[in-house]
Image (tube, rainbow, N blue to C red; front, side, top):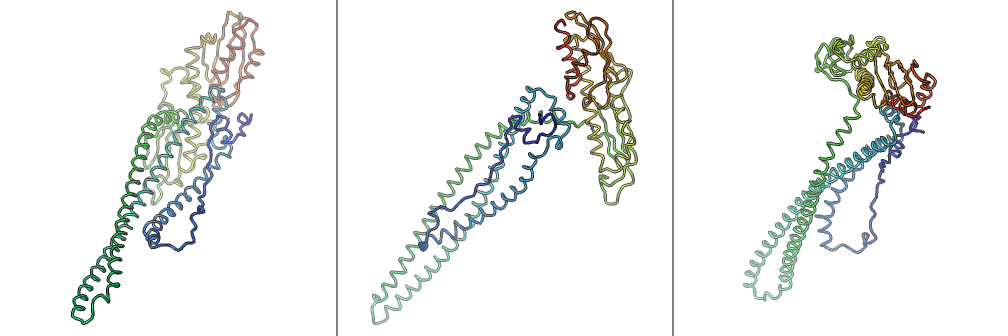
Length: 456
């Protein structure tokens, strides 16, 4: 009921179509109990902290800041679910509220396909960001490895210099009267220091190789998964693009845009709109400054009335009826700023009238399925001649069309020819047909169903 009355929100509309879009809450990490150790750090812990943990922590902090900024930006879009659907897209709501339950269910299934597509695409983006993060970690680790290697080389130089000093010292002590044994503890400590430094270098090299192998394996696995998902997404992209084109209400094409004017075509190039610009503004290289004045807007019909089918002529008359009813278009569109809204309003009317023309062509071709004997067009009126032997009835229904179709009920008259079906019976049926998409076809279908199938 809220959906029909236009007071349903975007989120409630998704729920009605069984399309669930959960908003994930942020998850905060906590330091484990084993993380806070009060024992004094060992030299190995200090090396890990300086060359491994701190550089990684700095990169993770930068990544977290970037993610937090993205989350703050996306929170603005999450509030759209609380806004009314009719305020977000009125033309879309007008189409959807006339759909049957099966059509709504089918549309919900298509939306779920789109949601699945965007979910997988977001995973790919997350994988790409993770690959970028791993690249930064790898670059940082390589940089720290170079620093540590440089420090080890400096220590090696110091040790070599110390050894050369020891050799010179031994040679000098040999000339002294006391023995070198006096300095043996000192020499032994220096040799042990060199052995520990070589062992530390070997351990660091091994850790570095293990880290690189693990990161490379993870990246290869993620790359294979991303390639598989991209192949699936390519197949879904086509169906999603077709769905977007189905609900696209843009009915205009630009055929000319010069410094003096712009020309737009509507309805298979049968209507031409020429927009004449005022003097150009200084600094506006491309002539697209929103404040640039518009001198005039001129509409012209390019339809060949003699060769065009009656339904096309009817559509043209209704569109120009709308154009004339708006008065002076230059007042509605004094500058370029208002031109997109004018094009949107025209597109909406053209779209509705084009669908009306398709409905009339459908009834002319397949009207026999609905006991529709004849379809005639007189100016902006459609005459429908129904005849059914099952109920022994024949009558003509005349509908008066306007540019407001299909958002308003149609005035009608009924001329009884055979049988007992007249204006009262037809009026009772039409009162049960809601306005909206395919209004004319639904009128004919319901008359056939309620009045022409079973004897009264």
